[in-house]
Amino acid sequence: MYDAYVRRLAGRLPSSCIWYLDDEWTEEDGGELRLHERANPSVARVGSREQDLQLGWLKATDTEGEQPVFLDPLRPGPENENCMLYTFDGNGVKRDLSSKPFANIALHLGGGDGIARKIMVEDKADAQRFHLIDAPKSLVATLVTPPSKPAGEDGGEMIRDVAPRAGTLVLFDSVSVPHEVIAT
Image (cartoon, rainbow, N blue to C red; front, side, top):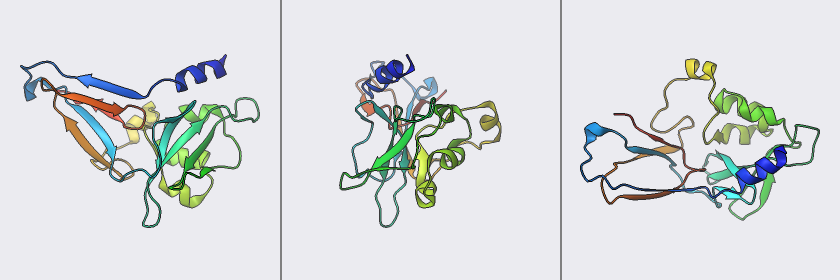
């Protein structure tokens, strides 16, 4: 049953389309869309690959470009240990980020990049570059995590605010681009 749910969820289209129609909007109304885009272009296609959704990034270095990281939730392994992260390099070569699947429950732990690096990524160089697109939130993480900076937790993001002015059409990949609506 879980496998069927994961396949249905992962098969969804990750695009969002927003068309603003209110020609009386003012800044005091709030409601701007904030997109947290990556500062560097990706070396490979982002969003999803068949049933696998993008979960994070390997941040660009001086020698390697920004690489999307995908979650394969159906790898063969012990019961409830079927998750594997993988990436593609600029030549399209697929590479796993660990030698064996990890427990499904790890995806629900709060703690952000630090916890994910320890549980899901084996190579130290990859772990230093790894960044979750949107880390799971927990009460503890909310209390101890400082507010996000304009460049994001890993320093590899840039913020784009889109005002909801009439006639504005926004189309973006809602899986690979974290987003939020700014309050008044």
